[in-house]
Image (tube, rainbow, N blue to C red):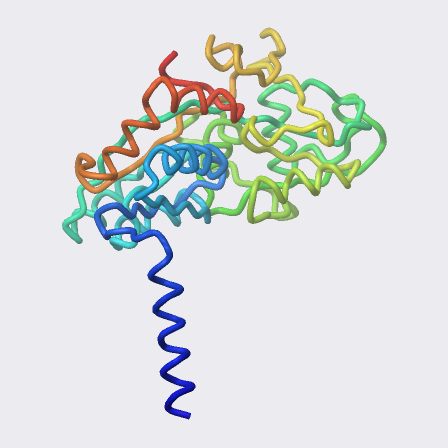
Amino acid sequence: MKKIIALCAAAFCLHFSSLPAFSAEKYVQIKGSDTMVNLVQAWAEEFMQKNPSDFIAVTGGGSGTGLSSLISGTCDIAMSSRNIKEKEIALARGKNIEPFEIKAALDGLAVVVHPQNPVDKLTVRQLSDIFCGRITNWKEVGGADQKIVILSREVNSGTHVYFKEHVLRKNDPAGKEEFAPSALLLSSSQAIAEEVAGNPGAIGYYGMGYISKRQKPVSVAQDEKSPYVAPLIENVVSGAYPISRPLFLYTNNKPQGNTQKFVDFALSPEGQEIVLKTDFVPIKR
């Protein structure tokens, strides 16, 4: 029995000795925004190809989760599709964490419906009325006589917060509008994409990078007198598309060491080209 245990232990050590060695200072943990996961994973894959001795771990969970992890010291970089809140900054400083903000890319939020839905354009006010539950049937906005099924990200999502503040409340800091109680809160942008693809009555929203032929993005106008604008990269760059936002990386103080090395890559011309390839909008071109 002792011989078997010894052999197993030797095999275990041999196996792990053959794996790449990642020192603590070369391991970077990144958590947060589901909107940004595909982009940051693409950065990480290319970065690790160029730096084989480094390891970048990327997980989602929402902007709030990422910022909470940064505050608790369980990640090196938080991905966030919204600005950090004052109360989060205060909580961080209470734990000797000083959040440092890095604008890494831009994103347009696409509002999507089932491809069979004849509705292809909506104003911000109509979107607010739909997601707040004041408009409940597609016939009220030029569609079929069919109940509207509202899909939203969960409350921990930066995308949820941004959509509420900029669409439901129409950028009014004093606004009190909330999502309709009937809204289905889903855990990821991919979950919304799948539900819209299979539900002719559904409407949802997510980052432009998730658009596929299985959903139809609608054009959005700021108001009835404004032009309807499609969620396209050039329209986000020009500022014409009304539902667009910056995407952030947050670190504890100004990044250093391998964290700085990764951030430098993300902001480099090569990193910003990856932004474009993943259907986001570069901040540097």
